[in-house]
Image (tube, rainbow, N blue to C red):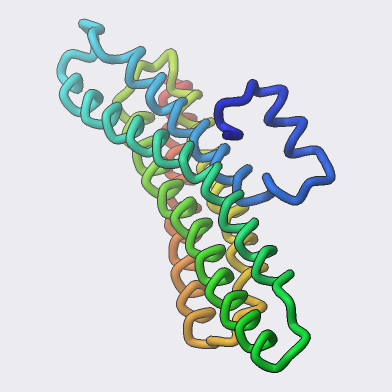
Length: 209
């Protein structure tokens, strides 16, 4: 599995001519890194006398961030799998009319799944950036910049995921399904952008204090 490779091996695979891993896996990786940074802020806050009043909140954020990190790590691999499914469907034989119909049905079904995975990635990134906002507001001042970095990475992950969604929905014959994907990711991006902006403002304020 890709996630079991070293960082260098993963980067080499991303840079290679092989289609997967691609943008969707990279989006999930950005989100997982963001979640890891949120966890770090929490771990640098929990147990500190100065932040005793927010310890329960920070422990809750830590648990949620770790859940997000685990899911996004899984989605790195899952995006590779659904891309392979799309390509396998596209390469099915299409000599007869029956084969062409079977191939088209398989391809359309694979496209739906290939759009759904980056949508899940974007949703996870939205959760992470909300956690980053809370961590920036309550976490250890010495680590507040890392909460800001988490928000930036989560935003990048959501934006990258949106492109993976769009490239798949453009080939969908089901216009209603395509529009539903576009509508959902548009709302996610708006909220992630708002939260990232809020997080950065909190970070700037706390760094200046």
